[in-house]
Amino acid sequence: MDGTAKQCAAYFRKKPGYERIMRAFRKKYEGLGRVGGAIVLSDADEAECTAARELFGTAFYPPLVIKLSAFEQALQSTVFQGVTLPELLEAYYREPIHTRQCIRQQHSDEYREEICAAKAASTGSCSQRWLNQLELASGHGATLLKQTPPEIAGVALLKACAALDWLEAHPGEAVRLAVLSAKATSDPHALDAGTVAGKLFLHAIAYSLRADVPQTAEQKAELYYRINIICDSISSVVSQIGLMLWSNGEEHPGFAAFRLRRESCLLSLTNLAGLTGASSPTKRVYLVENQMVFSQLCDHGSAFHSPLLCTSGQLQVASLRLLDLLAAANTHFYYSGDFDGEGLGIAYRLAKRYPERFSYWHMSPEDYERCRSDKPLSNDRLRLLDGLEGSELARTAEAIRLSGRAGYQELLLPELANDLTNEQA
Image (cartoon, rainbow, N blue to C red; front, side, top):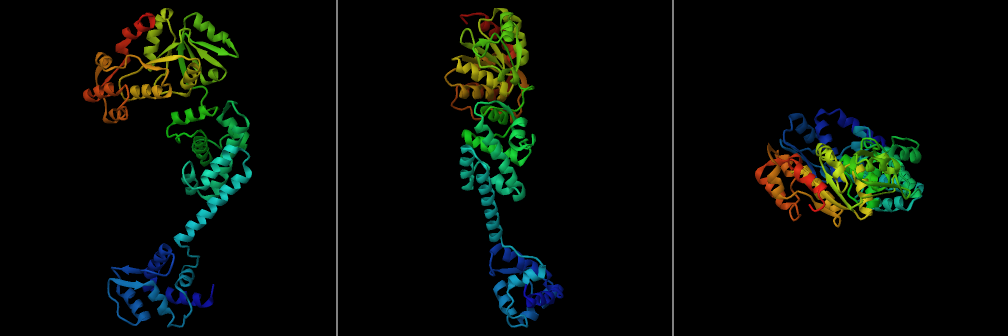
């Protein structure tokens, strides 16, 4: 730094009246990126007005207005001739002054360097396509990458790409998330949900599958499942009775015993990972949302003509895995749920996922009237009914919205049991 600039800074540092003026100069210069504009101190005190008068030779009164270019020009009439305002500011604050434009450019350069490093290290075509998209600085992880400190972002991006490369090199191979993380990065927790690498990896998967970035735990688990990652193999379960479950072309002997005895059983994601198929003897499967309803219906299990399955509320990966296997075997689904936002929401999701193989089962407005309770629904739960306009559930949703009361499957048990035990129902 020029010695004259240091002397100039020392001079102004001795003048208390310049403390706020210099601070305002710095803010204006950093924002504009050039010596331009003006500062305004509407509550300027006597010391600040006197300091300005000593430099400019004219009287100043509040509000104190000083153009940055005029200040720099006034400096040239002093012993500090040749010192620019940016040089003075850096000497005054004893540190480099970075304009917003320079900071943005620096961040942009760092962002490109992170992507270039990841491109050089990545071997898979999926990660290369994702990185090409990131290079355009839009969508699927770009914002997260930009907002993360570069010393963290670069390493996280490498880990996310390494995991994507591993999946591409092992197509169709089911793997648990922690195992994938360990194989790809040597750290089983590198892809945990709270890490930057884990978040970037979700963006990468969503991009490769042309899906939305998941927001809830259920959505994340479903996205992982679509790319053969097992996230929770124990707590994700589905209940069923009557299904034929296949392993390598033969009915699984353990589950066949449950079917032949007409008994229900739980299937975990670990169980389902070992199955190669699932089917119904009648090509039909009935689904209920409520575990207690499922258990009550299973008291008549020996008379069921078709299998019954329970989703236990919101769709878990185990349920989706089993339903996908059944859909592949040309199975038709009949779904019955509670009459509230959650119940109709589950039904709507299933109808969209299996549009050619799905029917609503006792979900009409008339069914709702038969099982309507006195329990009021909160506004938040009623809002869950939004978005069903135009669907087959629109009339039912409107009936629930008008009454403001929930309806429960338990009050439809006779009708449900009759349908399961009567082939002509």
